[in-house]
Length: 124
Length: 158
Image (cartoon, rainbow over all chains, first blue to last red; front, side, top):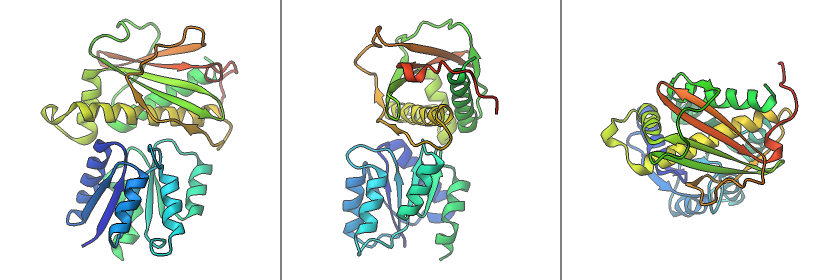
């Protein structure tokens, strides 16, 4: 059973991402929600995590900082991090990929787009 | 139509048409009074590389309609929190697209966090520009505040 941490300050967005995950066949995954990057990092440290899905623009700790903290921690650095952005530029996306993001997904999220980005991960 | 007019029209129409397949039409003169009791307003600051603010005001009924369509929910399932979250989401996407259009190709920018029902009214000493759009019978407005978001440059033809 996969353990997935979703970080987004919008409870509605988290609910929708959960729904998308169910639609693409991850309905039995353990989904852990966090309202910001700091909270997500704490949840990630609590147990083996298969995937982090994070919004970019959040209070307290944003998605980019969360990604950097995960990559900087040897125990967490291999966890795939999917970044969801509502206001990205190609330069920002390239920077996030350079930092080690699995992929960047533009809002609004849709099940097919999520499936496309997570396909290789789900297959593995 | 200057570059900001063009950018805002693209940003609003594309965002809502792609999100919820709604037909959105720019309106020259707003018929609905702004900030009516059943309207919600959200504000977003733009920090870099220019400074300004974007405000989006929408009737509650329209936000509800968008939320129902977007999340495939019935009207009874919609909560006040969902409306607020969704309005914040919409302004984020619109502002992001707008900045992408008005800045030179690929230039990075930094947005603040959406603030619902901003306490401060629009500062009359600041330059601002209002755009009105309609979706069926509902009108809604976007206001940009700050000289940098008014674009005195002519529209791009690309």
